[in-house]
Length: 117
Image (cartoon, rainbow, N blue to C red; front, side, top):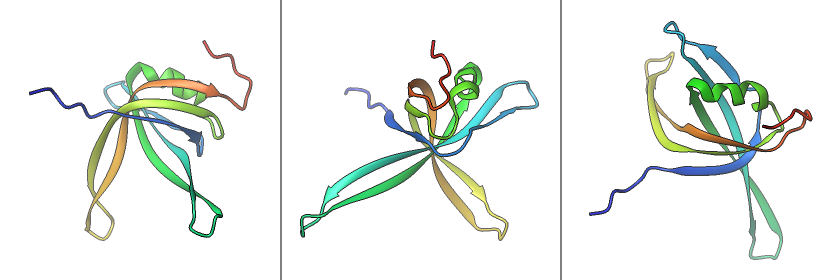
């Protein structure tokens, strides 16, 4: 049987500047939200654009890229795996959040004319 791979790739725009933190053990991690758009043609011939927001988490040295290019408006291609994080909210209700654990980032467009490379 062939191994099945949990892999996702997205091209989208960063919705807000990424939050980069350092854990107590000294490992950097960040969270960023990526927006993707999809256009569909309705029965009446009009086009409808839908935006989806994707929560992404980045661990380790890849955060050097996030610190420089994880800025609102930049267009990124990310590759990683889809994971589900469980937590309990303030009212004691258990919730599940889908997150993309990012393994690779490619900067496609940056709004701040920063050098890529």
